Image 1 (cartoon, rainbow, N blue to C red):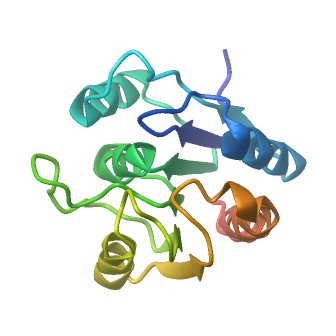
Image 2: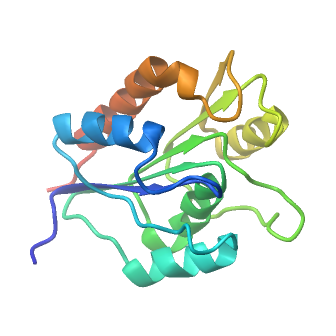
Length: 173
């Protein structure tokens, strides 16, 4: 099967599935922007390291732009996969970073990275998103929302579309 020109790889959160509300909505945005989309099902494991191994084994590639996007534990998986997969862009929603046992600093973060976090997140403290954004000079968007960010789908869609359009502009022939 030929590689897609542009590809978005989603990673869902610990308690959700590969085609939850946010991913389904953002996949529509990605397709409109000319990206192929995959969203592996990690629901059989709550171990972030196992999920990361599965993403590495999948070894997603694109001819021009690979974009990783993750929510909560999927944010951890997406961020940690950057060192090996070398995406052109990274989109994190309430990323579950810096928890004991899985608190290593992600490496290989692309220059085009964006973090969206809810001020009222009671699962992943907003300080985790701020810490990542500060260390990696990522765009940071703090919204009046909770961990799920499902009441901010329009804003998430706009932010994701902006990132995808910027990633497409950095395509290398």
